[in-house]
Length: 160
Length: 169
Image: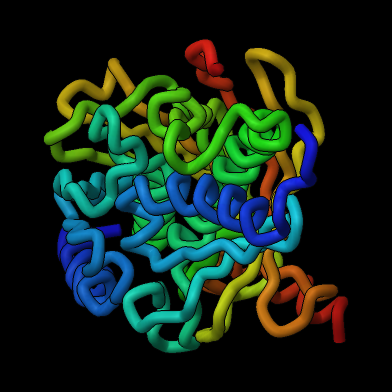
């Protein structure tokens, strides 16, 4: 993917993301976007607290940020041609998020087949080496025909 | 005890404890999740709202909202089941629940969500089943559906760390 193509893709994805009501409700923003990877974050908000005693954000809200960031990373895969959807997402919670701090998620597509994108992500406040949570997920994926031209043509021939 | 407790008193105690458990958590309010109670059985309800939408094109409920809903249903079910025994033993009611430690929610260790079909712009329901509940660890399965109980739109399994209780009564 050229710089220009990436820029365009990010612009489209940003526009799409800003139109998602749930992301808007959690005030998510895009911090970084690269080939097959992304960083997104959301601010601390008393409304999304899951433990009133400590003021710690609910795991579900962190999960929502991770899911969104993973989906965005899939969108940034060079061969991604259509919108994605989560097939499954596993969250591992390592520790409580620090109350009052912005939470970041960093996601990376480590393998994309013709039908599935496999994604890993971490959530943290300031240090990715000290994660709040990690996630692994499988996402719906359709590869561009252009990429595996010969193969795709063979397959469609066989199917017909 | 000479006289059996009145039905109203029993209901009041159970509903009071459930409300104390649910109302204390801001994120439950944010997602507008409520709980229907039939005896000890809980059904979590997430009323549809525009803000829950993830993909306006379909439109579909955001996977993160679905995951949050399922995790909340699992957490409340766990806390509720533990409180139930204390409630039946007459040790717990709405007045002492805060001090008792029962409002301290379990901590999620891991949570895996299967997205079976997209969540439509409709109300969501979920029921959780505690498959194992030890003193420290618990394993819970949750199913969520919309119009049709047999057509789940998501399910999840999670492991939880149970908080210690202060001595009650």
